[in-house]
Image (tube, rainbow, N blue to C red; front, side):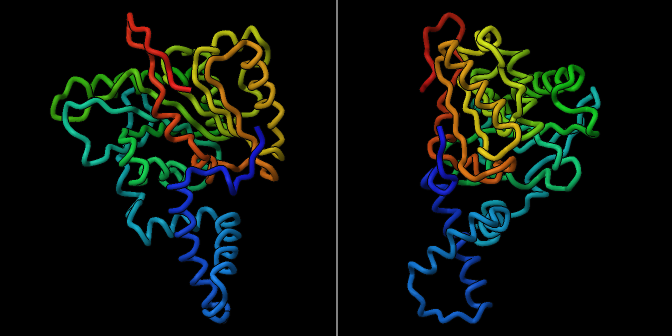
Amino acid sequence: MKCSSRDSRSPRLWMLGLLSACLLASCSWAASGRDNSESEKDMENFAYDLIEQKQIQALKAIRDAYGSIPNLDSIYEDRTHTNGLPYHIYVPKDLKPGKKYPLVTFLHGYSDLTIDTHKGFPKGVWSLPLVQSDHPHILLVPRYRTFDDMWVQDTYRTMVIKAMGDLIKAFNSDQQSPNIDTTRLYLTGFSQGGMGTWNFIKHYPHKFAAAAPLSGFSHGPQNVTQAETLKHLPIWIFNGDSDRGVAGSRLSYQMLKKAKAQNVRYHEYEKQGHVIDDFAYFTDGFVDWLFAQRLPSRGSNHKTSH
């Protein structure tokens, strides 16, 4: 499914982003010496252009104007598992002890290894109050330390799954802390993290309630036989149509459809390349769709939402 990146975001989140862009636009407008009596339509168009071109700045405006992400460096706790895996975890302060909440695991891309953005966008999306108020959850952000580690390697994949399991045990054995709902484990990632998302669900096809690979190259199912093992799993695939790896995402989607996948979606953004993580999570309906998915309870006939 092709769509415009401008029109594909959740209305509430998109409006928040647009308002933030308007703040940026007004500053730029004033700095440029333009007359404030210019029409609102011109201002709106200027804001649209700005948010399309500078999504990261828009996120900063959200943070500065609304306090949605007051200090990205302080809301995440840095930890290291006993197996050596470094990771960040975000546990909203208003989660109730003993109550079960979903766990979102985000796998970062190579850029998060080379520049210090590991606590910013797109991970910051999950800590936005608009998201947390509708879908309170715990966020896990594993980190690999060198390019050679990567998420597609068996060793690192095993380390992440082990750390995730121990984290769940720790939360669920402590009634003074929020618990993790093991029927609502969600996996997503961008670029190498998108590759990792495919890799993880191929090796653990029944562990996650849903998965969302962004720009994941050709690491998804490449034939119907491979797709058969994933056809039960809700998957939403994202890619830009100008990305060199888009053919892999298209093929994976086609194979899943041929395998009669129960709940698979594909969004391809027009005139967009590899870097889509700064807006893909705002795709209309995505967040609600993700948190609606559940693993069936043992002995239950419960079906996931489409």
